[in-house]
Image 1 (cartoon, rainbow, N blue to C red):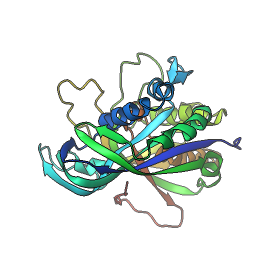
Image 2: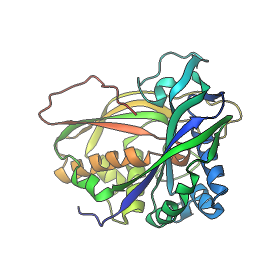
Image 3: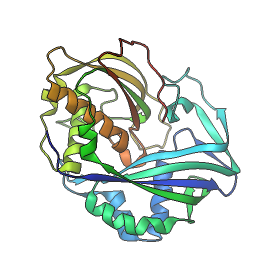
Image 4: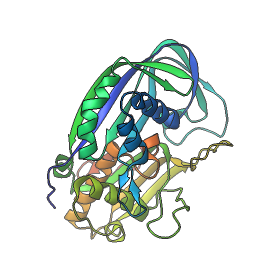
Amino acid sequence: MGLRRSTLTTFNFDVTALEGCTLPWFPGHETRGGFLNALRSVDEGLANTLHSGVEGGVRGRRSVMSLKALRLTSGVKWVRVEGGGPPPIKSGLGARLGFKALVEPGATGWFSVTILDEGVAKDAVMIIPSLMGAEVTVGPCRLKVSSLRIEVIDVARLLSEASEDWVGTDIYFHTPTYLNPLRGDARYKILYPELTALLGNLIATARHVTREDYPKPEDLASNAYVSGIDIKTPRTRSGNTAPTGFIGWVKIRPKDDATPKARKLITYLLKLAEKTNIGGNRSAGYGEVTVRIERAGQGSNNQRTPSQA
């Protein structure tokens, strides 16, 4: 399939801590709140759009924003606060499950915001650079934006580079992930990587970004199967109204009779997910993934390779 030219716009913020503080292992809600509050002081209309989404979608509104939660890269000490055994992945935020961050003054880190709607992105490119040098409060942490980089991603290029000859894909879920059912009660959340729901979510995202038609999720899912899984559902603390999600790893393989077109579309959607996240609550950093594609001729490898996030 060919795609009309469409883009995603990502804003990458480098930040420096103005004072010492502590943060949970996954500060997704805190990062979203800090970013939107800082943006609201510059342009309330854009902040409200990124918070509430735009009209459209099966359930009335569709989010136009995904987020990679704050990563601390220096000046931080990780302290274990709860047990439960080792996390199912060895890198990215998920590797810090069960820890909290002790942040020193002057600590450095980054977070990013991706806008999925080209119209909203045009406004954002004019407004968000005003946050350069501004203070962003993430939970109890006062941070200063030290630099800002804007990346424009050509979605059609992701499709052109997608593989048809893959024999396996390893998907690493670094932050809590949950999927909405394709039909029925939207209050019900799927807390494991059910293939039809996963591809259905990605198809909906791709349709929103590209305005193109895609196969039905169940038809596309019939071309692949889950061949390995290792996930964990972190405990949800009292008072946290966000749904619980899973982190970990899953391996997907194509069926022998999968068509080249279906194979290519599946890897395209998964690589798109690295930019947009997967599942619900992406604007708070849920559903962050990285994907490793195993192509034909590379040899069978049933062992997972930790993926960097």
